[in-house]
Amino acid sequence: MVTGIVNNYEELLNNIGQIIEVSGYRNDYIARKIGMSPANFSAKKSRKSFTLAEMKRIVEVIDNEDVTDYLMVQEMNARKDDETISHKDFYQQMGWK
Image 1 (spheres, rainbow, N blue to C red):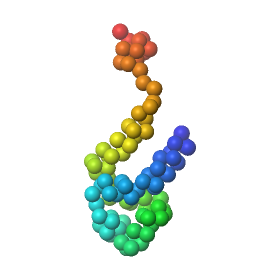
Image 2: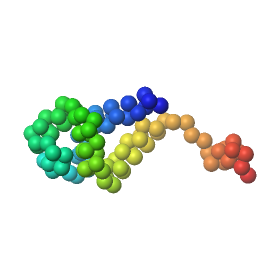
Image 3: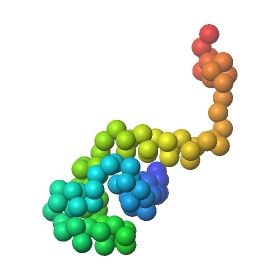
Image 4: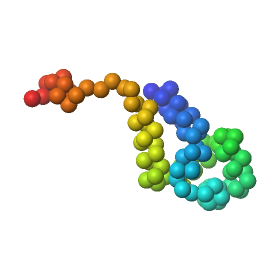
């Protein structure tokens, strides 16, 4: 479980540029909202070197429906090859009629 949390954070950090783009917010807007100069923000974004506190503030700023939809699609694509069962089989396994 802990490994999954770390992996999720690493995935977020590695894809923060794309997530920011999907959010529709400009870099300079986000930089101002988190108290950072646009130049410093841009450098950290390209190096993927935001601190945990900075990532938290960025996510608070860019959290919107577009980002949620994008992340949901990414999660669905990551799980597209997962094994599934039918509704009928699920009911049978659960002992429901």
